[in-house]
Length: 171
Image 1 (cartoon, rainbow, N blue to C red):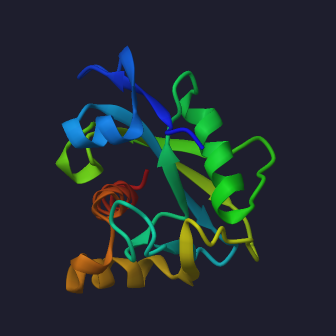
Image 2: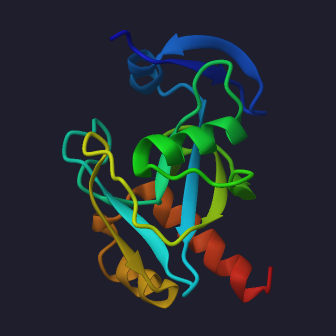
Image 3: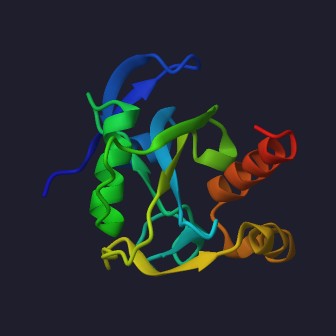
């Protein structure tokens, strides 16, 4: 299997070239990713615990589904693909865009679009990607992240902080 190819972008998230995954990460080049948070009818969020086989942040709790945008792919198509590949979820009409985060150290130099999906599960977890998953009440996620940040992927910590701030403002 050949190495994934990512679009390399500038600081305005405009494509300026393409490079293999390993080179993008090794050189810290700006690239694109998505994170999807899936909520159930009780308001709980499904989080995944990343497989220990992952090359980045193995064994940490992360968004319901997340991943890199492939070269030539757009963010919305990637969100649909990642939901299907990681947790076996197909959403009618795809997930809803929430907000975008600029590339930086906490995102691994990725511009990230964050999405929301609504589903009840159960999900078919991809064992290459996910060790396990669980539903969490949002009001328990914040103190867990605050008390044990080392157990959560850096991008999820950033996403959750921004999501909580938006909810406090009533957005």
